[in-house]
Image 1: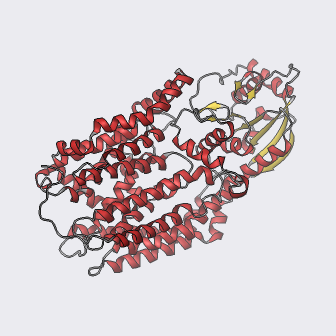
Image 2 (image 1 turned 90 degrees about the vertical axis):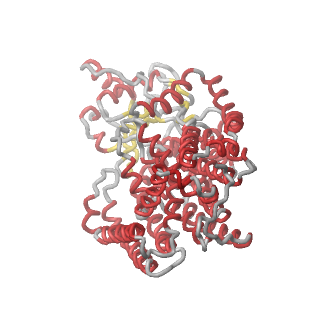
Image 3 (image 1 turned 30 degrees about the horizontal axis):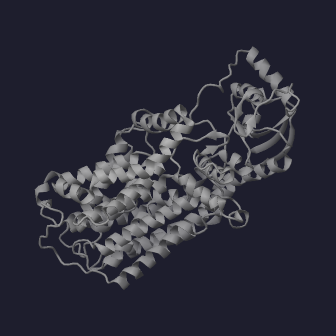
Length: 618
C-alpha cells in the first residue's frame, strides 16, 4: 500500500484560490478577536507567568540571550524560544507607552501561536477537504473554532507561558508531516522538521517523542510504514531538527555546566516523567476528565470521532484501502492518542499537558460534525443530543450563579463574589450559551451545512463580552493590589535597601519592581532564613551583607500579607508601615531587630533551611 493509492471516494468540492483566501481571512479575523482582543489590559497572573516574563525582559535588558534568568538566578526549566520571543517584544521602543503593564510582550507569543494554529488547521482543510465535504470553507472555519474555543486553549493562549507555543509549533509540524505524506512526492519534506526544531526549542525533547509516537501509531493503523518513511525521511529530518535546536543546548551546557544538565534534563524532563515533582500527584486516569473538559461542550462529538479511529486500530484492514488524502481524521486520532498515552504514563500530570492534543481534537470534532444528515445514524444523533444537553446544563449552571457564587472563598480575593454578582457577567455568559443551545438544536433538523458553526457563533460572543471582562475583573480584585504595593516599593525604596516578600509569595512583585526579591514563607524558620539570607546570600543583582559591614543597609523593605503579619513570631518588631493594598502591607524593618528575633528562634531550636537546594526557588 503506497501513500498515493487511489480508491473510489465520494467527491468533494475543492475551493478556488479566491475562496481559500476569503476563508483564511475570516479565520484570521476570528483568531485575532479571540486571542488578541485586550490582551495587554490585565496584569500577569501569579505564579508562573511572571517568571517567564521576567526572564524574557532580562534578556532584552542585559543582552544575555543565552541563559534565561529570573530574580538573579538561572531559569533552566524551559528552552529559550519563548524567552527570545518575549524578549524581542520587550526590546521594542516605547514599551511604557504601548505596553504599560508589560503583558502584551509576555503574552503575544502564546496568542500568536494559537492564531497560527487556527490558520494551519483552516488551510489544511481548505486544501485537503474531508471525504464527502461539500462545504469545505465552513468545515475549515468550524475546525479552527473548535480548537480556539477549547476552555484550555482560551485560558493558556492568554497566559505568558510556553504551553501554547509548544502546541502551535507541534501542530504546524505534524500537519506538515501529514500533508507531505498525502502529496506522495515528498515535496517540502524538510519543512516539518524545521518547525519541529522550534518545538524542541520551546519545551525540549518531548516534542520529538510526541511526533514519534504519533507517526508510529499512524504507520500501524495505515499498515504503510514504507510510505511514511519515504515521504517524511525521518533520519534526514531529525538531523535537520538537531542542527537547528541542539546548538543552544550545547552552548548552555558549555557555559552553565552541571547545574543546567541536572536541572533541565534531570529535573524538568526525566524526573517529571518518572516521578512526581512540585506536588503534582494525580491518578492515572487524570487525563480522562481533562479530555472531557478540554473539548466541552463538544466532547460527545470528539468521543464519536475518536471511537471511529480506535475501531480502525481493531479492524485496520478496511482502513488500508482508504486513500491517504482521506486519512486526516485517523491521523488526528493518532495524534491525540500519542498525547494521552505519553502523559498518562508520566508521573507528573498537569492540565496544560493536554494542550498539544487540542488541535487534533478539533479535527476529530469537525470531521464528526461533517455528516449532513443525522437520519439512521443513531450514534451521531446521540452525540449531537449530548452536546445540546451539556450546553443546556452549562447555561442552567450559569443562571443558577446566585446560589454558588457566594460559596467562592479566597482570602486573596475577598470581594470577588460580590463584584462578580454585581457585574452581571455570569448572566451574560448564560445568555450566550442559551442562544447556542437554541441555534444548535435548530441546526439538527434537516440537512444544515456547517451546523457546528451555529453552536460556535454564540460561544465566540461569550469570549468577547463575558470571559474577557471576567478576566479583567479577576485581575482588578487579585492582581491589582500586588501592582499597587510594587509601585510603593519603587517609590519608597532607599538605595541599596534589600526587598523581601513574606507569606504569600508572588513572583509578579519581582516583575513589577524589577528588583531582586528575597522570598520566604510563613513559618518561624522563614523569619530566621530571611535574616541570614540578607547577610550571606549571593546571586546576580543581590549581595547579602551583614549589618556590621559599612555598605550594608540597616533596614529591609518587607511585603507581608496580613495573615502572616499576625503570627506571633512577627509581632514586636516595631516595623514602619509604609503602605497597604488588599491583603498586603509594606514595612520598613530594622535589620538589627530582625536578626535578634532570628537569633532567639535559633536558640529555641529553629533550623535554617534556605541553603538546601530547591529547584523551583525564585
